[in-house]
Amino acid sequence: MLLLLAGAAARAQTPPGPHDEVFARGRWHADASLSGALEAWNYNTSHEELLGIAEGATYGLRNGLLLTLHQRVHYISQRANDTWLLGLTFGVRGRVYERGRTTVFLDGALGISDAAIATPPRGTRFNYLAIGGGGMLVRLRPRVHLLAGLHLMHISNAGLRSRSRNPDIEAIGPTLGLVFGFR
Image (cartoon, rainbow, N blue to C red; front, side, top):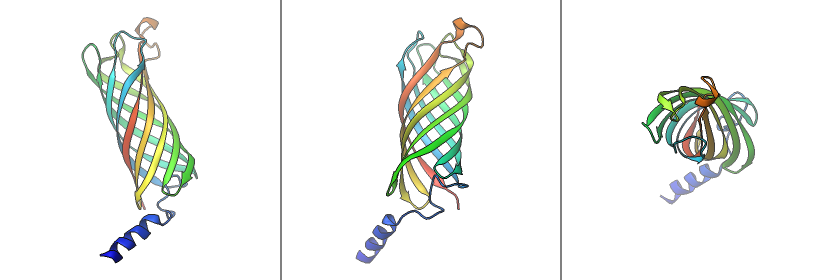
């Protein structure tokens, strides 16, 4: 039993191999995450709370820089009728610091979305998304990483219908997920 534990501890301390590096050039990874956010400041008549899930893929453009593509589904609780928002975003994630099993990153993404009803109230169903933040990845085992972060999400129609129909949402909250590497 002690030999098994010692072997497991040694494997956990080994540096990542080339197939395990999340920010390596030419590497694909899939990720899934949960998020929650509260409206940070309010320029509309409602106060929104967001709960979401995101699934996506990342590709290493070069060492330390990833291209990201995510599908996002958010439940938005707002003063009027609550709604569901489906979004698609693309962006970049860059490594800032790495030590041992932990990597710190910054990321940002832009995209589009469609909601079941106007969000926020007086807005439109179609909105643009801008998401930015940072976090850390912790290697749990080969090709599996825990993702934890804090993100700001901006939802706005950019005045497509008129300036009077351009309320927006700026929400900030935590993200927690898993990242899986491919061979």
